[in-house]
Structure formats: structure tokens, C-alpha cells
Amino acid sequence: MEGFYNKSLVLKIQNKRNEMYTNANQFGICDARTLVVSQELDVLLNEYQYSQQSQNISVRYHGQDIYQIMEF
Image 1 (cartoon, helix red, strand yellow):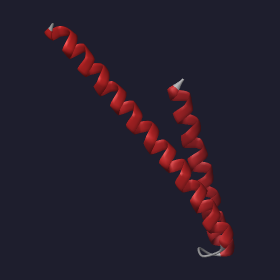
Image 2: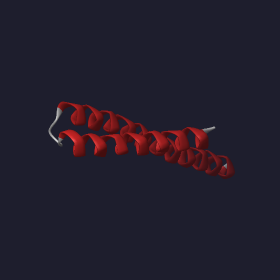
Image 3: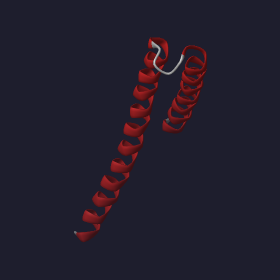
């Protein structure tokens, strides 16, 4: 399920980035419409980064738990 979520999120990021480029070309980089889309892209990128960090942390914790069990 995480794989589907990440693929969906990556697709949203790509679409939002394209929307931002289109707005920037059409209205300029300082236009409010471009800035709003840029902020929406930031939210998606932060969500993606958080999901990646969460996956790395859970793998490390699982590895640590297995190591602790083996010590006993």
C-alpha cells in the first residue's frame, strides 16, 4: 500500500510542478497564482519527504528489535 501511496504522491508532485511552470510562464514568477501553486507544491514535497523518513525510521527500529532479540 505504501508503494501505491508514494507513486500517487509522486504523480501529484509532477502535476503540481507542471502547473507551477505553466503559471510562471503565463503570469510571471511573482504572480499570486504562481505563488499559491508553489506553496501547494511545497506541501506535497514535505509530505513526500516525511513519508520517506518514516519508512527509514521504521526499518531501523525493526532491525534494532531483531538485534535485541538475538542478544537474549
